[in-house]
Figure 1 (spheres, rainbow, N blue to C red):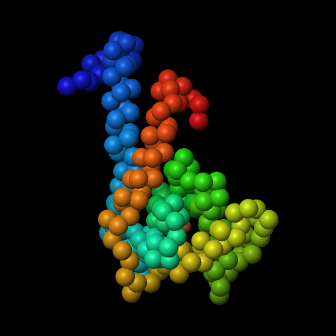
Figure 2: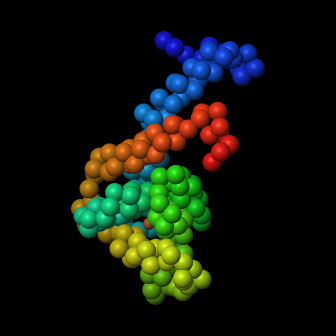
Figure 3: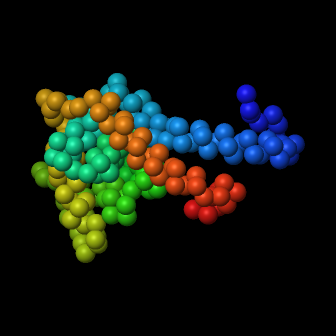
Length: 197
Ligand SMILES: [Fe+2]
Ligand SMILES: [Fe+2]
């Protein structure tokens, strides 16, 4: 089997580097989307944060509602993965998810994910949270979509009775979206893409 025989960079031959690039390209294409799906699936049996569904069930509920509403594939994936980093850092999970998804999303959808925490506050009626916090973004081209996302595919997705679709429904969407972009990225020079981002 072709592989990289060197055990460190300094002694790697030209053939090793050629193999590293070719095998790496095949690996990244074949596994596109897998890491983020693994992260989501690892949360299947997590305890809840107090609500009657855990983050995994919330995510599936958000994505199911978006799919059933007829939203496009990219927006459904946004719904599925907007909270994937919740357990990594609850206070900036929107920024982390946005960074993971950045290459795969259009500008507005990326902005919606990146800022959904502050927009979600708008719906926390009867709480002491600042419901008007998102007003600082009024006028931004993503403002209305962020509110729409949080109203229809986030704040209402903590219902334990909701019959969400299984993760298997969404896996092909994520893989398709990630591999399409990965293919484009791999078309560029392997020797330049590490620093041309
Ligand atoms: Fe969130
Ligand atoms: Fe959420």
